[in-house]
Amino acid sequence: MRFLDFKNKLKDFIVFDLSDIQSYDPKFNLVQLSQWQDKSYIKKIIKGKYIFSDLEFSEEILFVVANELLSPSYISMEMALSWYGVIPEGVYSITSVCTQRTINYKTAVGNFKYRKIKKEGFFGDIVNEAKGIKRSYRIATLEKALVDFFYYHNGIKNKEDIEGLRFNPEVIKNIDQDLLKKYTASMGNESLTQRIDLLVRQYSND
Image (tube, rainbow, N blue to C red):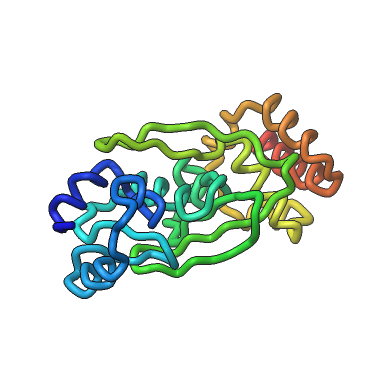
């Protein structure tokens, strides 16, 4: 197969793997993948997952990549909180929640971190359309991103710990507190409930 024909067939893919290729060409020669990598036509992200080398990245495209490297998963915790304006500093890893395993991928296009959560806790995400491409990605709601963050950060014990997070108070004050409490209760974790209560009290008093 000529590369231009290959690229045209997979033009709507952000990440593709062998099964995607074979759906178009069941007799595809795997040697071509190595040859195209050597020519910098494609890049291997992780084992068995590829992108086209001329892909123009945006934050949303990286979200799509994160969803597709490990599925099912959704963007959450630090990355989602940065996206919603809760965390003032930039975040350099794409953090996600998944049901399979905790794993970190350091790739040529960025760092992707996944935290395993119990199946009962895998909820509270929405589907957004990525701008400029025919792809969508899953990302936690603001309230679920907070619940996920505090679920894993169990070292937060007091007011000083909350202050140290340097969250944007204007964003926190405008969250849906009923939804936050509902999501927290659904996790069935008393220490998590205490940490979320600390958060709510801190920003209710500001």
